[in-house]
Length: 549
Image (cartoon, rainbow, N blue to C red; front, side):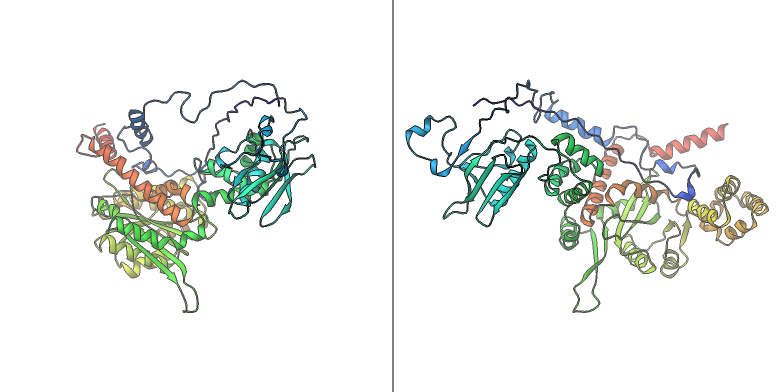
């Protein structure tokens, strides 16, 4: 029988661009600068060293050497031969024709092969089913036939399908069929009858490209990319397999792929107990707390809250300033929830992640629960907090930490002021000038100018204690004059890619990120020769230059 030489097909590399979330609509076009350049806290640390990916790449090259263009997993291109599949010859095997005589060995296709086991990894466009091929189950046989039909552009269905046998037939009745049934006395299923050649032409919209199969294909790409769009899935399947799928099937396939990569979201809540036990087993200083909601013994307990604070974060925070930023952000999963975070400020003026908690909603009770666990881990010393005007947070501070220094983020103060009394460049500059003033006289001048322009806005700011938003009234104890909560905002933008993942995957992503971050910063600091960290050094040099001029 004449055959055709199939050419190797190289798939083009794909690039998926992830766009960050947009800022608050009320603050579009407004830039509130700060002298400490806090917006780049997580970007440029001033060490002028190669990034983490470059370090790992150099280690990999030194260990394994440089790969050639024909490395592992890359097949050289083969020349495309003439396609002679149009010949009307086709293979036909039947169980009754299987004979042990010597004459059968002289037939071109030969009798049914013995001990021929199907392997899923060998399934491709050039794969051929043969009589005598064994399968572990009928489901494996049916899935293999469906996937192979997608590869070759045909559609099959199963008119005979029961617990011990299944028969695949071409949808266009071209004569293609495969019969697989159970081998007597064994838990094995074997192809008994086969006619493996299609006489019909290709089709585009193949129903055998099910969401289950597309989901497995998408899962391979989802492991290397954070997100993938529906239209990209439809286009990839059309380009790679020459078949069309609906947008609903692509959406369902993406859900299946997420479950394959990240695990089922509901199941991960039941694994939090084991996850907490493993963290405490690895380090007894790690803190993990789980709250369950159970109104009565007749009701099954339900997940309510989870808190995590790693021992490395506790010990590292002792070398940081007594300054903590707290914030909350929404989780983008089907179960929702709020992620509460506490972030410190390290000696290099960058954020230092401290503690994390998932709660049902942002209330006074949830903030009280989170802050109580946080203070148990870091000790009830004198701390300075900064936050947005979070729901229930201010009453919580007044009840738990009466008299504590609590600062408001000036950026969010201006956003609230703009919503009520209207904003503008003049009001914004006067408010920021008053907040940044280091002397009472300068602050008083800016406030009087604001009163002449908008008295309602002046009265609103005058009602807020000056030590909560003005530099001239803040204490010198934390050695930190920050008035914008960019510590928490920067960390929230860093973990944005993990906030749409199931709870266990998200916490494991955060833990892995912290380990990598601490390791890279430790290596950079060990090679730093100065007695002052890079970012404070740069700021100090700028102040000295300004004073000299």
